[in-house]
Length: 320
Image 1 (cartoon, rainbow, N blue to C red):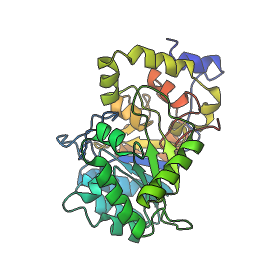
Image 2 (cartoon, rainbow, N blue to C red):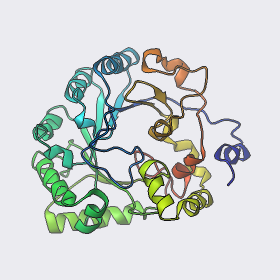
Image 3 (cartoon, rainbow, N blue to C red):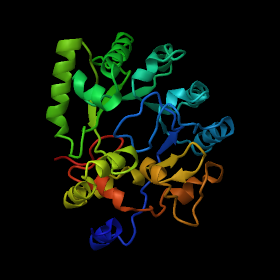
Image 4 (cartoon, rainbow, N blue to C red):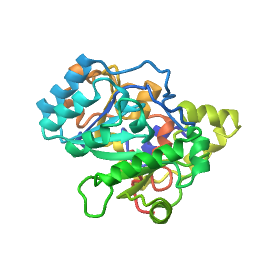
């Protein structure tokens, strides 16, 4: 395999640098009510990692100090962090646009049933993972009953206005392939999801994002057990698309771990690949002028973001 950094060097990138930092992506912990087979963080119900109150306060201070326009909350299941609602409230008071990533079923957990209304009142944009529009594939990836629970949560959100046509309560779905292959073209897939979910379940959403499974964490374990790891890496490398490089998410965001460490993206966080030496390494050292044009720490997993039409937390990076 040609190392990813070397592949970029052949394109004229002696080093890949950030273009700006307009998104702070905050990982609130690796605890989750699910243990999805494609999770890159090995998140699950028994993970103890949770961002603590002092780190939460520093995140708020950084957002206010540098007037960061968008905060993207993720996990695990970010809603399970005991300080989640406090953080959302404080960011809302600052006028920050908030994205929260949800697995949907967490909204039915005891003590979390009020969150749909909580999100509505603070105009939180939701990106909700739903692996497929049919029951069997979803339950196979997420466990028995996951599909029906997801539908129940989506219906509640729809009743509040989320996902409805012309509503400013944005509700997007996130699709992951069930195995070691690339996601289909998002346009036709979105139309299929929209038609099937509306016809069979009267469920509506704004956009469908497709995310390629990264060969790390629990998905890497699956690839290795099934004998597909080397083959999958080869497919990613063969699918490298130079047009994706300009839009890579690491060029526009900083990822904050539950411990307050800084990373170029959530995938680097999962692999514990810190920012390059000499840069601020924690949220307590955050300096926007230093970070907005920083060199990015690359690894061969980066082929996962640059294969085909590209893949990021906001979906594909280029038109197919």
